[in-house]
Amino acid sequence: MNLVEVKGVGKSFRGLHALSDVDFAVAEGEILGVIGPNGAGKTTLFNVVSGALRPDTGRVHLAGADVTGRSPDRIARAGMVRTFQLMRPFSSMTVLENVSLAAQHHRFGAKELRKHSLDVVERVGLGPWAHRAAPDLPTAGLKRLELARTLAMRPKVLLLDEVLAGLVPAEREPVLDLLATLREQEGVTLVFIEHIMAAVMRLADRVLVLDQGRVLAVGSPEEVTSDPRVIDAYLGEEPTRAEA
Image (cartoon, rainbow, N blue to C red; front, side):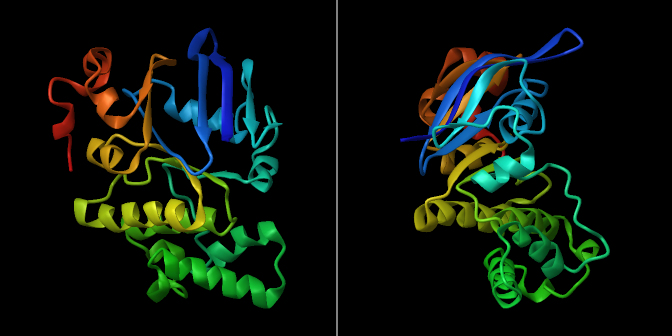
């Protein structure tokens, strides 16, 4: 079953075609990587799919329902939640309070809300920081907090916008392990934008390549990284030797 379907999506800004006739589908429980050069339209695609932008053309379906043009909040309530490249937690709140605020999306009772929020904080490895102010977190911690806030909403589909950016290799591994666990143990469907090809090769079932707002290729990581068009447009001559 396809949980997400994007059909013929186009989006322009003052005559610039950021997305043109984009089609793809994501099966339930699948992990789809999205790659492409800067300016390819990756974040614009996430903005359209998550409801931050309304497409000029095309439709977005979630679990068979047309969610095109719905607000981000309504789409999140339907089960599709996203992270952002720029982490902006509420600076006046603790880590736990930030996560609890996101968890209120499900209207828990007070005790259940606290338990659920603490569980999420522990799962992402922020237990020791739970009662610290969010701005005290290092970059890796802020990335985990951004992920925790989305997990608190119990998503069916998680859209991850460069969740590994700014992390050193040793900090990436636990995040990749956590993402794999989300799929394996909870069946969460993942769509992630990423420039670190080693992470894409490790995590993705399939890869969607965008170039100049259009779908250039879709296939397994091995198929995509050996595609001459993808190598020419994005990867260069030695794609599999990207930063680990």
